[in-house]
Amino acid sequence: MPTALTRSGADPGIGQKLHDVVVIGSFTGRNGRDRTEIQLDELEELARTLGTSVVERSSIPVHEPHPATFFRSGAVDALKARLGELGRPAVLVNNQLSPRQQRNLEEAWAVPVLDRTEVILAIFARRAVTAEGKIQVEMAQLEHLLPRLAGGWTHLERQRGGVGLRGGPGETQIEVDRRLIRQRIAKLRRRLELLERQRRTRRQARSDVPLASCALVGYTNAGKSTLLNRLTNSEVLADDLLFATLDPTSRLLNLSSGRRVILTDTVGFIQALPTELVEAFAATLEEVRQAHLLVLIVDVSHPECRAQLQTVLDTLAEMECDQPTLLVANKIDRLDAEALEDTVAALEETAGCRALRVSAKAGTGLRELRTALDALAGRAVPETRANRPLPAATGDQLEDATGDAEGRAAS
Ligand SMILES: Nc1nc2c(ncn2[C@@H]2O[C@H](COP(=O)(O)OP(=O)(O)OP(=O)(O)O)[C@@H](O)[C@H]2O)c(=O)[nH]1
Ligand SMILES: [Mg+2]
Image (cartoon, rainbow, N blue to C red; front, side, top):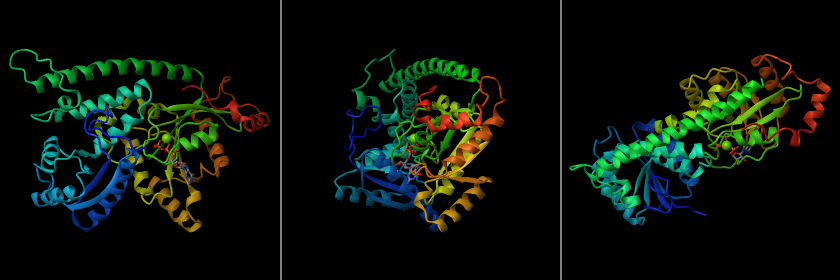
C-alpha cells in the first residue's frame, strides 16, 4: 500500500502527501556523473522504501551550487516545465540543500522539495517502534526543522495550523515557534536521558554475567537481521527495504563449545548519514560502541559493496570503535564463483583482513562463522565459572536443540 509522505515525516496524514516523486542529483565532470547515478539508485531505493513511486530521475551538471537555488536558473526553469508535464510530482534532491535553497526551489516549482536527509528522517519516523526510537527520531526532525523556520515557510503553521502562543510584545510567530521547538527538544532530551539510564542499567546487568557481546553492523540491507534470525532462530523483521531495523535487538547465541554470546542487531549505516540522526541516535549507537566484538556484514551482490564497506569502516572509525571484528561476505548465493572471488578479494583488500563467506538466507558458511565467533569471544572475555563453556559433547547437543533454547534473551 503506498503510504503518504509528509515533509517532516512525523505526521503522515497531516500536511502535503507525496505519491509520485522525481529524483534529482547534481554532478561535476564526467566521472562525477557515474557517481551521481549510483547515488540516485540509492535515493530511488529510499523513495521506494517510503512507498512513493519514482516517475523520473535526472542528473544535472552543477559546477558551483547557486547560493539561492542550488541549480542554475536555466535548469530550474527547465525542471519547472517538466514537472508541470508530469502533473507536479514532489522532488527529492540528492544534495544537502540549505534552508534558503530548499524554500526557493519549492516556491519556483510549486511542489514539495525534500533533500536526502528529510527522506531518511521520514523513513526513520515510519520505522521507529520503541519509545526511545520515536524520541530519537522526533528530536532529529526538530533539529532539522529549526533552521528551516523562516518567513512564510513555517512548517508548524502549515502542519499543525500554527502554534498560536504569542509571547511578549514584538515576538513574531516564528520566534514563538522556535522557542516552542527548543523547549520540546529539551523535554525530549530529558526523556531520552532517562531511557538511556535504563538502557545502561540493563547493559550493566548483562555485563554482570560475563558473556561476550557482539554487535552485527553493516550497510543498510546487508542482511544483519536475516543473519541474527538464522543464527538464533528468531523472527526479527528482515525485509528488502532500507532501514528495516531501527531499534537494537539482542538475542542469546549458543556456540558449539558451549560458550554463549549476546548478539545484537543494529540500525544500518548509510553514506553521509545526516548529522541530526547521528546525534539523536547516540544511545542506539552506544550499543555498538560497547560491544566486545563486531560482525561486519557486507552484501557481496551489491554493485557498490566495496564503497559500502568503506562507509561502514569510516563510520566505525568516527565512532572510535576498534573492537575485534569478523568480516562477513553475505549473500554469496547471488554471485557465480568467479565474481565472488573478485568481490571477496576486493573487500578483503579494503578491510585489510580475511572475510568469511556466508549466505544468511541459504544458511551457508554459518558453521565457520560460529567457530570464528567462538574463538574471538573466548579471547574477548576472560573465562569464569559463570561463562565457562560446557564440555564439547553437551555443547553439540545444545546446538542441535538450539531452536528455542537460544533466542529471546536480554534485549
Ligand atoms: N539472496 C540473499 N538474500 C539475502 C541474504 N541475506 C539477506 N538477504 C535479503 O536481503 C534483504 C535485507 O535483509 P535484512 O536482514 O533485512 O538486512 P539488514 O541488514 O537487517 O537491513 P536494515 O535493517 O534495513 O539495515 C532481505 O530481503 C533478505 O531476505 C542472503 O544471504 N542471500
Ligand atoms: Mg535489519
